[in-house]
Length: 155
Image (cartoon, rainbow, N blue to C red; front, side, top):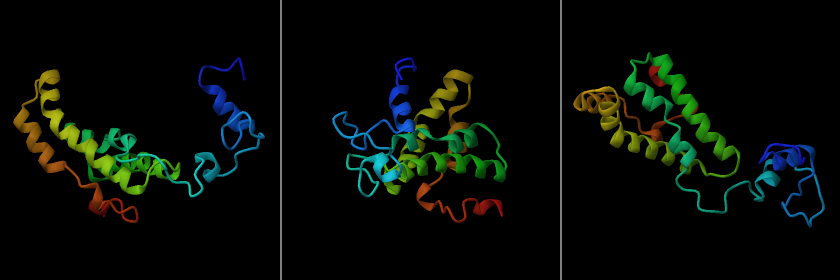
C-alpha cells in the first residue's frame, strides 16, 4: 500500500483485512467484518465526547435551501432527508448517539439563523429583515422529525 495516496493506506488495509481489530501493529491481523469491530466499541457506540454531532451541524441543506429558494413540499422533504441521512449515518457508524445528531442538526440551524442574514446581505445585497422573516417561516425543530413519516407536510 506504499504507492497509495496519503491517508488511503488505512482504508486499503481495512478493505484487504490487513488491519488488526485493535489497530495495533503488534496484534494479529484479522479482517474486520462487523460494525462493532470497526468502531472498536463492543456495543458500537462512542466512548468519547460525542455531543453535539458536528457532521450533523454542518448538514444544513434543507435549511439553507429553504431560506434562499422557494422549495416545493417535495423538494423540502428531499433536502431534509439528505440532512437526516448524514446525521443518521454517524449513528450507524457508531460514533454518535441519535440525540447527538438531532442536537447537531438543531445547532447547525441555530448558527445559520445567526449568520445568514448578514451573509446574504453582504454577499448579495439581501434585505436582512426579509431574510429574518423567511427564516422565521422555515426554521425547523429536528426533535419533531419522525423517520417513519419524514414528510408529513408532503401528503
